[in-house]
Length: 423
Image 1: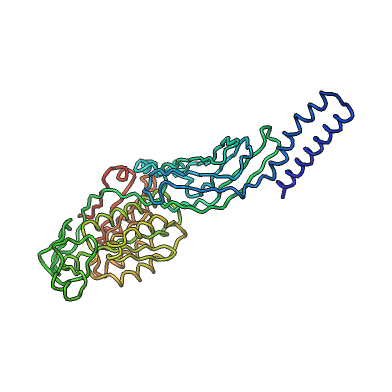
Image 2: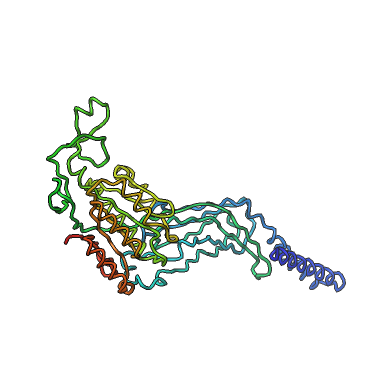
């Protein structure tokens, strides 16, 4: 309303100025008076048209070089503009609405060396450029978005504005145009050193190897993308008219469940949470490439489960979910752990990735240890945030035979991340 009143005031002023010039030429007469009137009047008429210029008839398109990228990558955003007339425009300012999710940057593994300084990652992105189209009907502007952070970034509004060369009048128009880019968490190379139960019940734990044990066939199951050609059971495939593969003993016994509590802390630690997401996805990617039976359980405001078959055949959906998940308020992690554990077979290795340790979580993990599960905790924290209370809770878990690995910025800046629960 205020802007409309300003435009109306400028229009009235210009009209009065034209009237004054005309009156001056009429009463003064002479070549000079009429020359001033006819030379200035076109400029004033042009300035009168500017506030009413019809931007809504422009054809504006937003083009993203990619819709799905990895964290830290770059995307080029291009805005193409077409108009129907050659009406002269001295300048056009094109401003792209920058979502709040792009207010910080991802510079790769180097970002973790400043884990304690959360302000280091903030970046004020300004997507605004001035063009000088003059009589052109088609023109475009490009923006480069680099160091993209994880998440789904929605672009909703393009602001167009123009004015006269003297800055006396202006006009602007907001165009609603929805586009988005999804940035997946980075996948790191993992050095895997975990221990799990041996194949024989009651024996001591044995190291988990990267390759499957393919000498003990326990049954058949439907084919999953990534299975070897030699595992196909041709007789069962011909009988059921569906591709079936052999199921080996390791698939049934070596079960890994990754638990990711999202809201297990009152303090939101963005970089620790980003490390937890990237570690979780890296573990899933490595186990998937080895054909390991692994499930994912995310405890957020809405609990989410991914089965082993979903991780094998629908890995893109897992990436998309981990890309868009956000931290929220604290929730009842203990109750959700209690519900999830009933679905896991005995002897399952439960790998819990946390960014905050509290008494409720520690007591829940100790209770699960009594149910014949193997527990391993990856605790991600900055060295400056490792308090005596946290160290006391880590010792409490280790006394209950729960392996705990503390991952700090010194571990996260390495090219190869190590996950080790061997004692």
